[in-house]
Amino acid sequence: MPHVELLWWKGCPSYQRALEELRSTMVQEGLDPETVEVREIDTDSAAATDSFVGSPTIRIDGRDVQPPLEEASVALTCRVYRLRDGRYSPTPDPDDVRDALRGIGADPDDVRDALRAQGADPTR
Amino acid sequence: MTLSIGDHAPHLSLPDTDGAEHDLGEHGTPTVVVFTCNHCPYALAWHDRLLAVGRDYAERVRFFAVNPNDAERYPGDSLEKMRERVAAEEWTMPYLRDEEQEVARAYGAKTTPDVFLIDAHGAVRYRGAPDADHSDPSLDAAWLREALDAVLDDREPDRPETEPIGCSVKWKP
Image 1 (cartoon, chains in turn red, purple):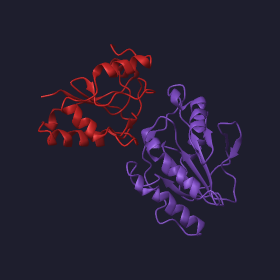
Image 2 (cartoon, each protein chain N blue to C red):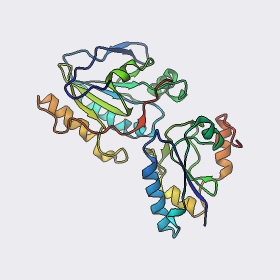
Image 3 (tube, helix red, strand yellow):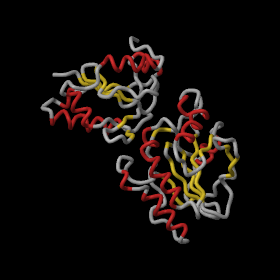
Image 4 (cartoon, rainbow over the protein chains, first blue to last red):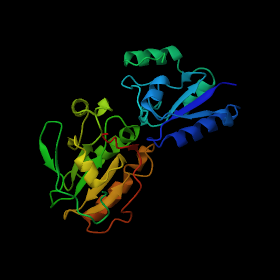
């Protein structure tokens, strides 16, 4: 069973929709949707500790379902995602979530590299 | 303070990305004021739809996009980043910087985006979201268009107020 985390911040209204879509995808993939660890990020220091680049952030076994955009930085903010058709979205593409649950999502090295490129310390 | 339907919009002016001042409260022509920003996914998702409305009603309505966010904590919303966006994209309305957040406070803006339609006499006639769903481009900012058509036809909008949906305005500490 993969470890599924959803990190959220109260200033952004998208996390409920992201959580619903995540749980729905987990059901489709035969996973228990109640195992999602939902954590609120509510301080700048918590955002730095968790390399949090915006709400919602979904990680499967530590892998982000989509590497942060180049311009993203660690902050209490809403996260910008790109859907597979190129549109901007406050929630990740469900197909990216599904692929991540199947173990073919974003490589954690890519995520760390993206954070380093933005000046963030991904080890904190 | 929050502007309610029927309230008169204040006479406040803001600079655009070239430094030119624009009076948001000038009467005589209906005006749409959209609080928006660079970094919010909701604002980005609705952006093209709002630009399309600006293009379609340009001859009869004034449009302003206003970025009120604290650029110190959110550097993606700095004036420099606004200029970069305007240079790279085809904007149909001036992009104004509300550095002191005075206009956002006077209007009671809650989110980006948050849309206000002011009629030719200065009264607020619509406030809220562009349409029902940021994720469905086919909705085409229908709520704003309905309100614009009503005001231009000297009617009351059927739906004068909706809940603005988006990222919270990033107030300065």
